[in-house]
Structures are given as structure tokens and as C-alpha cells.
Image (cartoon, rainbow, N blue to C red; front, side):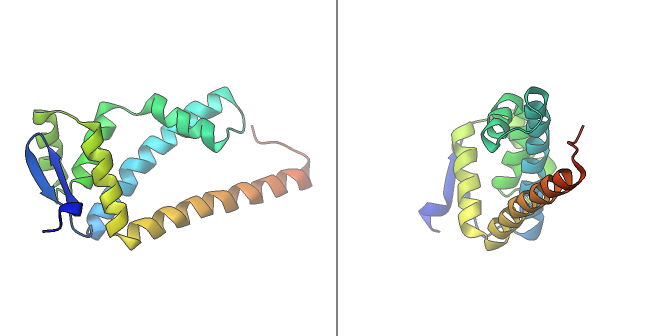
Length: 141
């Protein structure tokens, strides 16, 4: 096994491989749930928050449950319930989970492309909405 793909958490070694489609979806779901709450928190402060504000909002809203859900995905538990149970029993450690996320990103073109397309789509949507607002002379409520 390639040690570059290994993560150790609470003495247990996880050897990560290219994530399956189910794992990719679980990672995207976990990131999306936190990102949505982050954007909501940021829009409470500013009508049109910057990406920096949304990232800071992410730090403000992320919870232990979010890390447990993300952890079960990035450590590649095929059964998310088993992964969540293991993490709850052993405790959340942020550094190994971040390392596991980065390994998954490195190993999966599908995950990288999905994230790139998602963020590109948001940028395109924002540009379209700004253009529409300019034409109509309105701002979103």
C-alpha cells in the first residue's frame, strides 16, 4: 500500500483508494450542507457576501456532527452508519480528516471535476443574476 494514501486516526490506519461514486457523493453532500449554512450565516451580515465571508462563515457554522459525517465519507467507510459510529466512539480529530479529504481530492478526478463544475456554476449563476438585476434595475431581497 502507498503510505501517501494512509491516514492514521486513533491508532487505526486507513488506506485510501480512489473513492467510489457513493463516497464522492457522500463527500459532496457533507461539504454542500456546511457550505449552505455558511452562506446563510454570511448573508445575515452582508447582502452580497464575498467568498472570504462565506469561508469565514464556514468556520463559524461547522459542527462536530458535520465533521463526523464528512469523516465517515473521507475515511471511505462504505456504510456511513458504521463510519459515524466509529468516529463517535473514538472522537473527532480534525487533522486526520483534513488529510483524508485532501487524499480523496488527489485520488479522484471525479471529485475534483464535480467541485470545479459546482463552483464554476455558482460563478456563472451569480454573473447571470447580476446581469438580470442590471437590466431590471433591482436587487434581490
